[in-house]
Image (cartoon, rainbow, N blue to C red; front, side):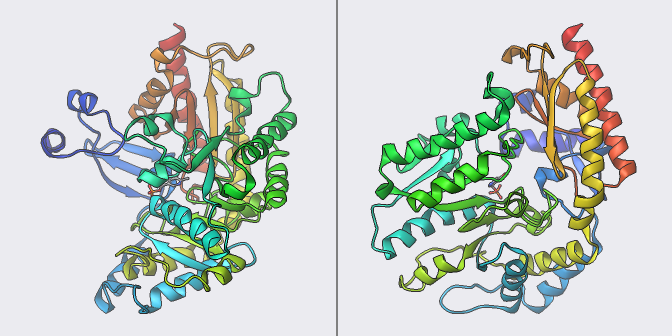
Amino acid sequence: PQTRQWQDLGRDHHLPPFTDYKQLNEKGPRIITRASGVHLWDSEGNRILDGMAGLWCVNVGYGREELAEAAARQMRELPYYNLFFQTAHPPALELAKAIAELAPEGMNHVFFTGSGSEANDTVLRMVRHYWAVKGKPSKKVVIGRWNAYHGSTVAGASLGGMKGLHGQGDLPIPGIEHIDQPYWFGEGGDLDPDEFGTRVAEQLESKILDLGEENVAAFIAEPVQGAGGVIVPPETYWPKIREILDKYDILFAADEVICGFGRTGEWFGSQHYGLKPDLMSIAKGLTSGYVPMGGVVVRDEVVEVLNQGGEFYHGFTYSGHPVAAAVALENIRILREEGIVERVKSETAPYLQHRWRQLAEHPLVGETRGVGMVAALELVKNKHSRERFPAEQAVGMRCREFCFDNGLVMRAVGDTMIIAPPLVIDPVEIDELIAKAHKCLDLTASAVLG
Ligand code: PLP
């Protein structure tokens, strides 16, 4: 009975993010009321395995008392103070050190933000400021990738390459350009993955030459693109990108908002691929989503230049918020002391990926792929020709609905189905996830293939 009342509140008063309001008013939202470990409960008492860790963020799982305690302790001690104008507080300082210890070598400073979007806004402003201080103010353009998601603020949505977001609000803003993503299954044609990886990476060089290297500040990309469909790059991709960035003296910003804090089986996706970022955006798994927080981790050489640049006129009321910082510190302690990232790498991710690959045998599945605790599969009409369903059939959305109705959260990006469960998922829960996914593929197949 309460479900209806909450749904009415939603219709009468709430404008939720990334939602079609007309559809929402026809069929109210599902109401999630509590969670524990890797499971959610809705207002009807259904137990649902959260195959997406919320929005790729609840890395240590739900219901961690230690995080609640850390927040309560900090609220009693110092609930708020800012980091502006040469003031600081212990949680932010200790957290910056903890992050520096985990980050790739030579990245020892952190600028805190309230979210991943704000982190990427910070990247844009910081790289332009960097080049201006270095006496090359024309180096302003940032190159991102089509179909990437870097957030919903004006800069975040512009750096991202999602046409839907660009279409609303006259984006991208000037000074942002895009190249293709290394999406072999969708766009590789007859090329083998390695050849395709090299070709797509070479687009970066063509773009730099078109724009003039004296105008290009940075390239931004996720080590593994998440919301764009879990695009795992071919092995040739990153080495080629690195070569081009070095050749033209372009900064590299790795968006680690999803990949960071263990998702790939390393602390950062950049470590998984041996990348050498100049800046890394972080958020989500930094606090396991328990409270909002983001940041940009910055390479020492960049900091040395910023040190010469006078005041950096940038920051947020909630930059390094003490309660968020205390939760992040406790979250990192849990990840470290329980050896969660190591366990992902050596045990649970290999098992998850092995079981996930078995879904490739399903008649509806054209490809399975993944790394660490993130994976995707492609729904296709014909396995052998890779023919896709017409978009109007909304097969991915239907599959997602079957999943939810059968106790599993999976995400649909078009007809690509995605999972990114909490990193603490155990083998029994992985079996539950795969069994439910299999059942929902069967239900989808009978609905769309007849
Ligand atoms: N960057 C990436 C790669 C993301 O996946 C997201 C969120 O999904 C963001 C940035 C934006 O983060 P936030 O939603 O915290 O602003």
